[in-house]
Structure formats: structure tokens, C-alpha cells
Image (cartoon, rainbow, N blue to C red; front, side):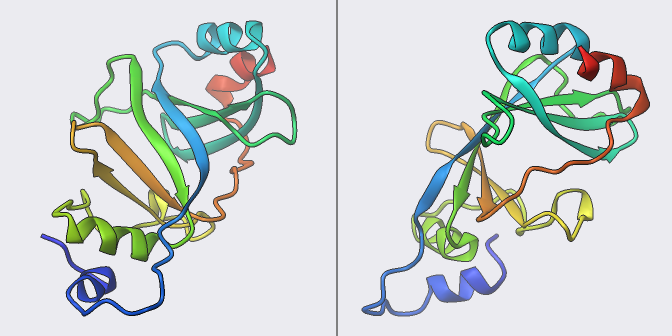
Length: 168
């Protein structure tokens, strides 16, 4: 069920003002990995560098890779060693992340098409320093993360168990 401010806007009559539903950029492709050291060695061999880390909880870390320091990330490697039974640990693509100009307006436009988000927009791991995100599925079931512009790459300290892998 769609709830929130974006749901109310979806039921109002259209105005002459165009909604801010622009995708500002492809933010990242999320890839679930089994071995951080092995995966980082592979992506370094093809020219990517570790440019950021989001330590989202014990055993749950995101490693951001880009072509060069200062570039925006293009790959988000997921290291998840938690006991969460809901998490899909199979290696491979998890989702595509799209940065959008106005998350609420995009959700309004999607609600008009009958697309329901997996949940209301929220800050990853409850961290207010990270812009809100929402997950939806495209018509073929591909998971898409919508990130409120401008989402910055976290620069958290690399968790101890991953220091060797990140150091390369």
C-alpha cells in the first residue's frame, strides 16, 4: 500500500508545473560478493579503485569502487556476513541504483502507474547523514534503488576484518 506525502500528491489533479522526476545519473550497480579480497583484486585488475565505504552494521559493509579517486562510484560491493535469514547471499547483481532529483515526485509518478515501493523512503541503516532511498521493482521484477540527489559516497572507517582486502 502506498503511504506518505507522495501518495497524497499522486491522487491530486495535475498542475502545469512538471514534476521533478528526472534521473540525475546512474549512481551504482550493487553486487553481492562472497570474498572481499578476491573481488577487490578482480575489480582492481580491470582498473577500478576503492573510493568509499559504508559500514552499516556488524558484518554488513558496502565498498564503493570507481575508475579513479574523485570519480563517482559505479560499483557497490556488498559484504554481508550477518545471520539475517532475509538477506539473499547468492553472489551476483542485487540492484541498480538511480539518483533522482526529487524522490517523492518519482514515487508519486510510479504510484500513478501502480508501482508500489517496498517500503517508505528511509535513510540507510537509519543514518541521517545519508540521503533517503526507496526500493521498487521494474515491470520485469528488477530491483531498483532510488536515491535522493545528491547522495554522497560514505567515507566510513573500513571494518577491521576488511582492512587487508581493501589495502590490496
